[in-house]
Image 1 (cartoon, rainbow, N blue to C red):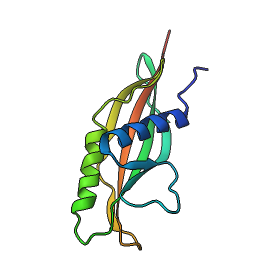
Image 2 (cartoon, rainbow, N blue to C red; image 1 turned 90 degrees about the horizontal axis):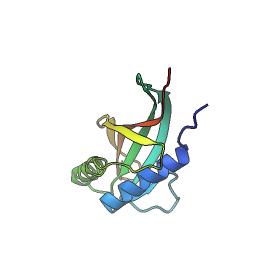
Image 3 (cartoon, one colour; image 1 turned 60 degrees about the vertical axis):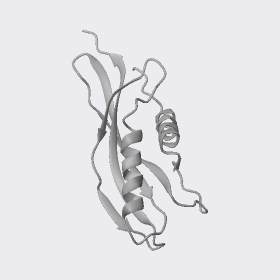
Length: 135
């Protein structure tokens, strides 16, 4: 069987990209004392999405954008926009893995948490190729 990319390796690359391009922390597990604003990355599913000649998997994530307490939605909207802009850059992965496509699936919800912080959930899919199909 052809080896797929490690989920840990992929998440680390995504977190590094988001932190580098937004200047905000991005967690895979939020510490108890984390101060907003920050992002939280959560894996939802991994699905095969093979092409005619390549093995491809789609990794579906949810980014939780947590803005500081504010009556206005300006800060949460800025966090969402910063995330969208950060993800326009390619994620560089080790061979033989290649990022084929990043799909921004919009904003699922914006709500106010019990702490008063605005919380947006933004689903994003990353399609990763990891080998060629030979006949």
